[in-house]
Amino acid sequence: MNKDGKLIVFSAPSGSGKTTIVQYLLKHKELNLEFSISATSREKRGIEIDGKDYYFITLKKFNRLIKNEEFVEWEEVYANNYYGTLKTEIERIWKLGKHVIFDIDVIGGLNIKNKFPKQTLAIFVKSPSVEEMERRLRNRGTDSDSKIKERVIKAEKELKYAKDFDVILHNNELDDATKEAYQLVEKFIK
Ligand code: 5GP
Image 1 (cartoon, protein in one colour):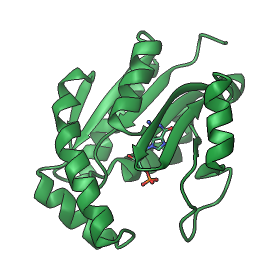
Image 2 (cartoon, rainbow, N blue to C red; image 1 turned 90 degrees about the horizontal axis):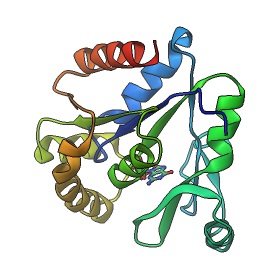
Image 3 (tube, helix red, strand yellow; image 1 turned 180 degrees about the horizontal axis):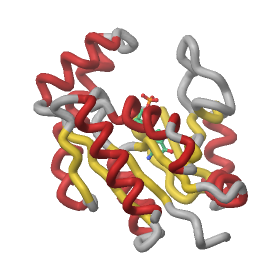
């Protein structure tokens, strides 16, 4: 594997604004970032595109890829919903001469950091409170009540891992958080 590229990990409980921050950074072409498309066994949501948002695959195929050791990291993020980063995905992006940016869950983020400690900048995005996070999820309107509850319980567990990240980015004001994220990434890739 090409070892020159960098890995920028954004992890956070859902509803923290991490996806918005990642999308903002991707628009800034001068940062030379490419989004790591994860493989998942979960169902595609409304406007999502296979091969752009995720590689949507069956659970059977996911299990085969695990067995063949094709993942850098993988996890059953929610019951029966598997997510993982394929080794070939990192290779694909490094071959383009770009840095990889990840929008993945907290344990997955730390696994990337552990596998590539020097090349990785691991950023934990923290929303002001779990209540605020729940409010953001409800506003987003993409998840059912039970899914939101599941995500809130997961968030409470994930907050305990914040201290293991290189940086905790406080997302009180999205504008400020995106600008701070930009500066962190710019400095790291220099
Ligand atoms: P969603 O179903 O809302 O797209 O994603 C659910 C969670 O899975 C999010 O926290 C997302 O960041 C995380 N996730 C997405 N891709 C991966 C991956 O490749 N590995 C891990 N560990 N988590 C992922």
